[in-house]
Length: 478
Image (tube, rainbow, N blue to C red; front, side, top):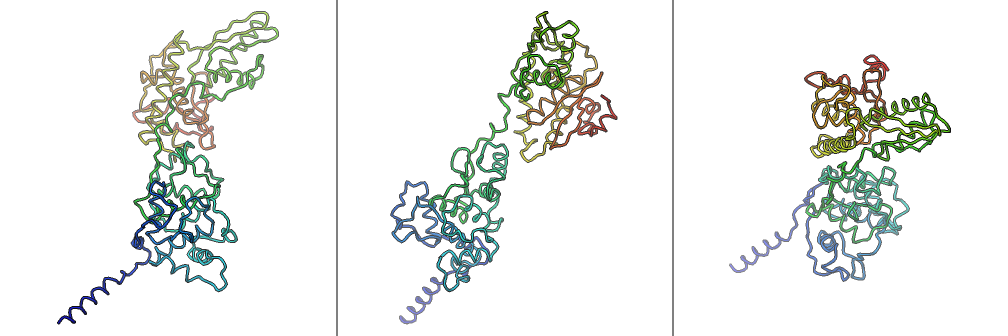
């Protein structure tokens, strides 16, 4: 009887020692089968990479270096990242970190990494781009390229897609990576999957820098352990806010020309004034007559009106026989309060801009066309035409639309252009003897946009949004 019991116990023991069958193509194969007990002499518990390096050991992906260290600060070679990636791929595919690479061994291999490279190439993870460079230090861009393709995309879901898209598109984060950076799509993939959050507060990736074995361990273990993946701690509220923008910032600064005569010179001098947040332009001609002064006054006012968002629509002129001429711009309805109205209009436009961003009505992936349409809708939904407006009404400037919800065409156009320019959209105002509207370049194409006529009914009329010049000409000639 005793012998029987011992035999049964032995059989049970043997059964417990048999590992569960590995699954094909399964993250269930990522199991910590070892326990780290201080195997690496250079790894202390206060190391920033402690959890990652211990995990790399416990998942069976590394046994460290021959001298008993992990080599935290050593540079990782291309061959070493290929080895790590090959093990992860094989463990996922077969349940054995070495089965896949071993199947691609060849007699005479002098580099350990060779069979891992052939395995990854056979799996379609890599092409021939790393051939001949296995002994070279790996750049961080090369590491991203290898890791981004090691596992199927469904294994690495884009948990950080929104924050990374917004942060990168704003050019406030990951600023050292552009579309010209080697493997930039792979780098961004790692951010979206939580494999990397960068090296500093702005998420810099340092794509051309070598990578240490400690830093590589962090990314490698996040590949196999979702609990180690990270989300960037980025404050996006300030990224999209237009707070602090002035009306002068909305103008491309021009060069001051003391005695402008051509349309280009007048435009340059006017832009110089507007970009400086000034409303006075002092010119100096050799001599000037009353008729010539009047012509300059009319020319500069016509230019100023193309920058209708600046809220100026009148000009006064003083000159003397020495050729000195001073132009002062204002609004017929504003008087000495013009600067207050300008500042309040700018503050209101910034508030609208920030609200549309924070509410998600405008997002980084939107085209200029789509953004312009959102603002067109906002204008139409938040203003009514002021049929009682006289020449001295505030409805002629953007302030009235934002403050009172009423405007006429120059107020509509001024407010709309202000919002577009806060998005960096190039636009101007075009007018005839009785009307004014927007001309904007959206995604490289010029369109005419008439928010005034678009707001003529209970719902926005989008037939006046993004008109071709021909369509606009048929509506209002200029």
